[in-house]
Length: 109
Image (cartoon, rainbow, N blue to C red; front, side, top):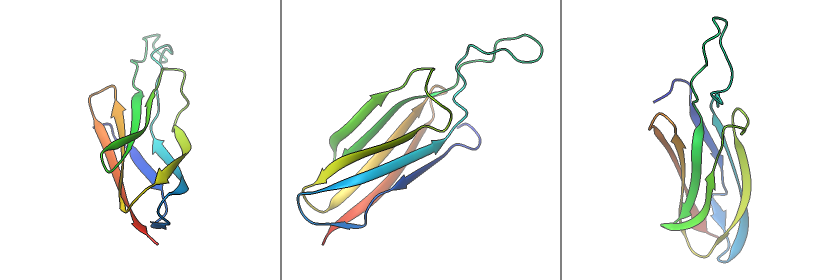
């Protein structure tokens, strides 16, 4: 697992059944494109979060493939319908094989 990689998620703790909620995610990651060189002239190896997914109770909400042009510390804000009480599972996939997960439970108000 890469050092300093930290996912953060903002999701409501409660929602009405059928309500559309806004979810916000940020992951601290350098996102090295593999196209820059270090001071010695050697290419810095590519190291990016290459995929981000979100599921609600096991059903896909969003699935994003990221390319080297994505910015450092990628941020996503998106909406999802909460049909029932349950869990959002947020997953980030790193080039080095690391997988970062964060879960948020939403109750029905």
